[in-house]
Amino acid sequence: MRKLFFIATILLLSACGNQTIRPDKVEYKGLDEANYLYLNFDFENAAIAFSQLFDVYHEDRFAIKSADSWVQIRQYQQAQQQLNLVNQKNKPVYQILQSEIFLYTGQLFTAENYFNSISNDISDDLKPKYLRLKADIEFQFHHYLKAALTLIELSTIDAFADVNDTIINYLLQTSEQQLSDALFNQDITELQQGWLEATYIAYSQDPESSRQWKERWGEHPAKAFFLHINNYKNIAVLLPLSGKYKNISNSIRDGMIAALYRNGATQQQLNFYDTGSNGENFSYAWYGAIESGAEFIIGPLLKKSIKQLNELNSSTVPVMLLNELEDDSNPNGFYQFALSPEDEVRNVANRLVAENKKRIMLLAPESEAGRKLAREFEADLLFKDGQVVSYEFYHSSTHDYSREIKQALGISESLVRSRQLQSIISHKISSKPQVRPDVDAIFIIAKPEQARLIKPQLKFYQAENIPVYSTSQILSSTIDRALDKDLNGIKFCQSSFIIDPLSLQGVLNFDVSQIKGDKKFFAFGYDAIAINPRLEWLQTIQNQKIEGMSGYLSIDQRGKLHRELAWAQFKNGKPVLLPPLNLLPSIVD
Image (cartoon, rainbow, N blue to C red; front, top):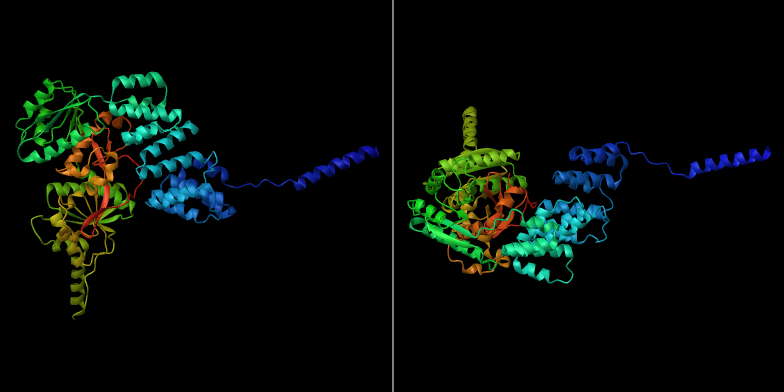
């Protein structure tokens, strides 16, 4: 009996001993709910929940998770505030998030330097996020091949990564020489080789090579390259090659020819037809194109010719207009490619909001077109939680815009209040007109000759510290630094090729300095041909863009092509390219 009691006592003490040395598991009240919110994409509430956990338990991981939640919905200021609470800043998860915030708030070089300091010894759970960020940074530096290869690597470790269309997008912007060099790299993987070979073949649009690739590679993911590729051999182009639009048409034609032979391609044939200065020859040009067996028609350019085309409605041949229809109805399913001023005011609204300039003063010409663009801008700005706080329309024919500027800046009201106060107190007072304090920025829609008068007058009325934005219209076709010094400080949207043609020299196989015509229309013609094989693909895959000479190009469901432009600023009378601000590729609204 004593023996049994002794054993029982030992067992009891042993059990008690284990209880005293086993650490209690910490119960984090609210953690399950925070994780649930995050996993169900309720990132705002997840960010708040993780922040509350940090306030209670003071563990870095909760601040990091809160920051991550804010990043998911692009609330970078809140994300940075959470990251600032973290003590151990040498952890990869912290460094990746900090790099993301730098990248997506426009600090591209800082993001790259910070990202490069991250150790390559990344855990498996962080690797997909690390590779996505790496590809984003490479893309923003126009390292398209590197970005594509990074996403190919991502696809090998994350079976659910939906990156094939983005890989195609990046590879399409890689030069043929870079593809060729990469294919001869001995370190290339089999998966990468399949992708690069598919891209190389897609450049040549050779049906036999495409068939052989499919036989060799079977179910390789790059088979998506050969979906929705339009291999049109006979392309007809309808342009006003005579009359007052002759020079514009010649520039478009030169750009088209340059694009046709950009990679030594000889499969396609371009046939040009003159529609006449006012569309008087359009029907002859149209039927001539049809009778010649055109498989695809580009043009016409003029509104009169487009109206005639709508009335004909007599062909199933796909058409890409080099202009826009008068209304949104598009019963014939035309593609529409235009150097659209509506796209540009959308670009301005995006830039302003990205720079946290949300209360805008607007100056626009007194015309039907000016009022239409003003309405478009206001609608775009309102959609992004901005507001036009004041606006005025000026007459383009005058040289004095002081009345409109004083009215828009609130100076006229300031003077009225001063006079009213003076009449009340019955003696003269000293007063200085005040600019309304609620203007974050000024947007002017103006040609160079108007803007050169408006900008100095803004300075005269004490608005020199308010940033000014404009569209590409402000840039003269001929740079005159003496005249354009009055435009100093103005930011405007324009394709990087127009501002700095050499910026695209690395991906072109001709000397851009030899372009003699209008570079804007040369780029327009170039893109009309270069994007042609991918029209259907871009319209089907709504989240992709292709970098063209005239801007980043995308297509909406109605077949309308949109441009997202680069940005420049006048400095010392000369336009200078600005680094990108809103860095994430995104489809046009």
